[in-house]
Length: 366
Image (cartoon, rainbow, N blue to C red; front, side, top):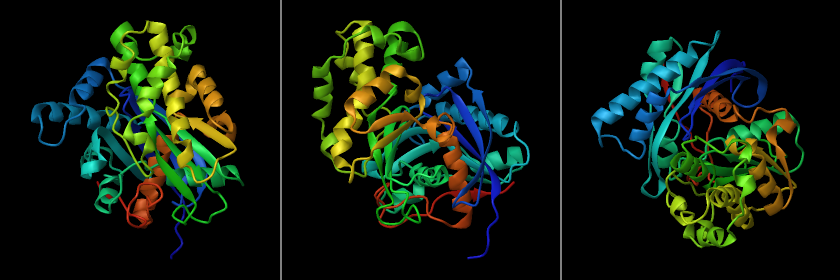
């Protein structure tokens, strides 16, 4: 293969919390990480977030007016953020996930990479998930190949788990002794269950807040373990990986805690992500000594305590490795964009269930 020099790629990520768009620069050749660059956040206004929430759960063609309004928000916000950066060679554009149904081999990330390339003047890679699903994969999670590169960059020499707690939780089990992320035994990855989404929905519904800051409300409550046990009786937890979820797959979690006080309901839904990971721990091919936590859940000290209590192994914030947990997903799409441009796989049977290591992404030039 011809030599490929590292380039400055900008990854963009707007998650299911719909608070805004993360942007992060990564210098990489699509294999190893040379440098972590600058990052920025472009928040959604309340009006923009309301438009995006109205589109949640839709599929293409469901409601053209709502989807058109949402697309305008996605394109404008992402273009605004890209134009804050200088000397970018390539953009990785994930778009806004509105729906995900792996059982029917379909997923919907709202966004137009060709339009974004025109708006910014920068080549853009987008539509990362579709080909994986064509190849029999779940289309998610897609960060594990980047997690593998991060473990190499951090110098890890023993198997470890990266746990991302966003709206949904997902875990990547990494064996850094392997040479490539697609190698057999290098990775195992899957969604673990609901993470922050039910708790955030509770805070919005009952108190008009976006989230439980520092776990303050949950810290005053008591966890109802009976409710957690009812959740674990669902087939998802017995299902072997790979497996993935949509943000709304556990939408009835609020009904389960409807008779609890605010504090007890918050405590129970704060324990839920950790308990979900613990319920899936038996699926791991080996038990890691160290768990590195990223995503919004890592900022909640009550969630971190629940993880320490329920998981075997030591729990750390991912910052202990010198990584930025808030920007890890954006950085992942910078990394995947470069891999896509090079024709390297973005997923493997062990990460998404695709038939063989799968390529992905559409490439659009200005």
